[in-house]
Length: 160
Ligand code: PNS
Image (tube, rainbow, N blue to C red; front, top):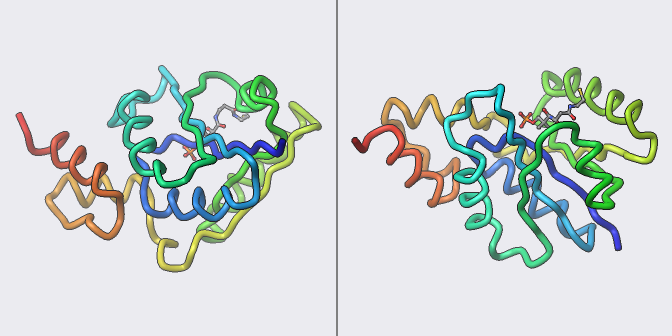
């Protein structure tokens, strides 16, 4: 059974993330989308809210599961019996940080490999931060995030 993990903050999930999930899920029996629940970070959405939005966005892909984790990714991977970490790369600017992470994860657990996938060009400018910025000021995010996320962002920023 080939299990891979696609980790991230997903605050919130974008079409860029979904693109990586859809394309990478084809190569594994099971893809676990792992949502970082970090009490030290101050995300816009709670881990539960982020998971609900991801679950809704991936419900058409049968071999994708959504879970949250705390602590080290390699520990979570070991528990899940996953040896492959999937990461999306948008541009050279992502590379330095991701390269460091991949090497650190390898140092922590030599059994784990990081597979990088290039984000589709049409989403190469997308990030959760940019989406939040646009949504906060009432810009149109329809082509950037699944409908469930668009709805939740509007709720977060514009309903009392
Ligand atoms: O979407 P993000 O914020 O780029 O995701 C980063 C994430 C969650 C993949 C990364 O911060 C992570 O793996 N955190 C868990 C702690 C860990 O294992 N760090 C790597 C060794 S320093």
